[in-house]
Image 1: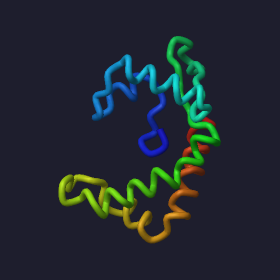
Image 2 (image 1 turned 90 degrees about the horizontal axis):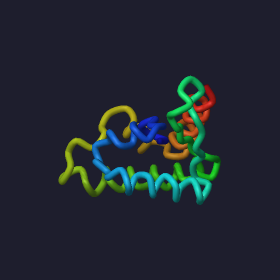
Image 3 (image 1 turned 120 degrees about the vertical axis):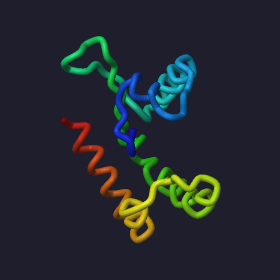
Image 4 (image 1 turned 135 degrees about the vertical axis):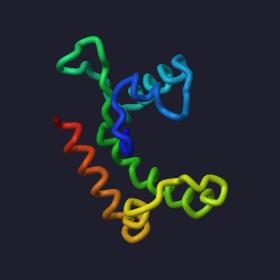
Length: 112
């Protein structure tokens, strides 16, 4: 949600992870119960649920970024297609600023 801007069940279902629908449903429900995400209807399509991070969910951004840094340092030789370029460079140069920008961009996009 935070990094790839996925918001709907279909978005998550079509991810490379190939999660089963029953597991995805259970995970989304659990995240909602823990108040990490909220669920509402799309304004132009009352049949489709949209999931958004709460402030509590956004507070996980530093942890997610640390996992990204760890992956870059420890998994690149196994998985060379891990994200490269300006994003990983910005992340390595100033994690705090990267996290702040990520959170601000998410808030801006989700408020539309």
